[in-house]
Image (cartoon, rainbow, N blue to C red; front, top):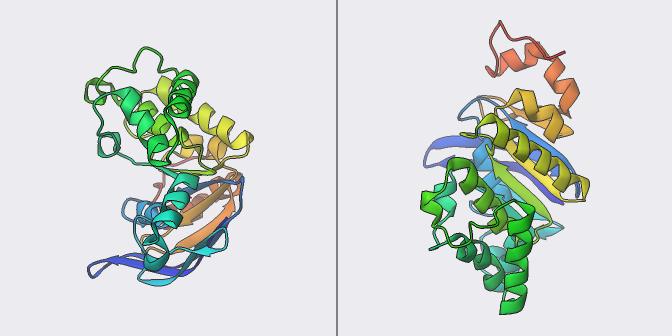
Length: 249
């Protein structure tokens, strides 16, 4: 589904990714793991077409993703419908007057009629436990509630792949547990799920495969999550854990 070959990206003269080669198949669950500033969030933005690589190539379902293809309105709209992106900071994503309009925005951009839009809003509101929130302004919601609305807004477009940037950040333990279980459920019904995270406790639960990044913005390892988390020396080498870290039994 996702294929990157020698992808590099810099912010002005500051490298964020260096020669990243990676393939993610349809239906996989993959975590990106690494210290702050290693390039995880930038790679997620590349996958979603929010930034275009300075070098290398990126293809989604065999179609090149670059400035030229993304300039095609029809192609770009279809691509962003199939690849949903949930930002790390929900306030960055939420901008409508109320929760109903927030969730309805994507389906309306897809050109769906009002009946189908209302149906999708109703379904996602029910799915994420947001019934009764429809008329509330997102600004007045809690952090966990905002995260649910941002997720609902993406799911209302029924994407094939869901990309989430540090989705557990700022959540209380109960909401974190709910989100982990929800992501596992989405993957079990065939959705491709890709996340960046620092949460070593949940990585093995929510993803079968983990890609570990170095502080030099390259890939250090690409392994089954259970195997990666057992390699304490490797986790120490990339400064993700300290000498006192012990793997969970």
